[in-house]
Length: 260
Image (tube, rainbow, N blue to C red; front, side, top):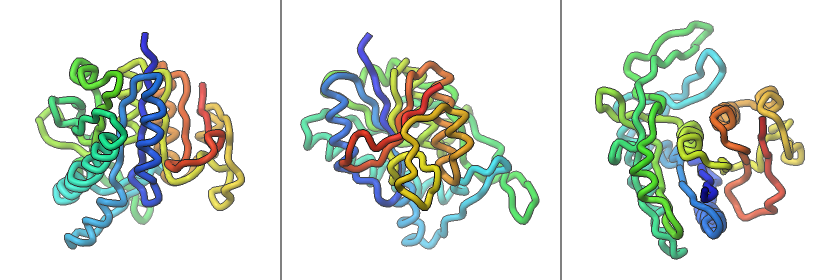
């Protein structure tokens, strides 16, 4: 079976799109690749321009995420598909890669369900009834495999379709993990704006080079918690290893490898 890697490019400020596309090209020389990308920084920028401030919520388990009312969902779609997806497809085409830009809504690529989002504020937990956040249950493998091949890469924005055919904002790291499991990929690479998992978030030299999922969970803080959750889901689904590294051209040894 041909080796396969799913690459997730974070959407935070500081993620180098050219470095991401260089890495995709490098992997594509010897294996099949799917690229999943985020759009958080661009969503923040557009939200400010459009006068719809971003609201961050904290779940009872401590995970931070964006509150996604309908207006925010549409702004996210504009950011993810209107700019990020467009730029990645353009940059990959410039590298001679036949990239296909799509979201999880396209061809019912990603189908899931809307979550009952619980948030904690002032010590109290409540349900957000107007939130359009969801999780992915199924991946349309026949469609995805049609778009994969030597020199061909699907570029996926993290939007999904609910059982009621409503658009959902889904976490990009967990989408990448779900796709990796569905494909039987041997690796998941999560690209972010830090070198990897740090023992001390204020000390870049405290990089953890290798860790089990349990060790990583004990060290992760803030938004890194979601990435470690995605790593757990990928590894439990049969993916051999998860790599977390900076989305920049750097020493390839500067990374965290997470394993069972």
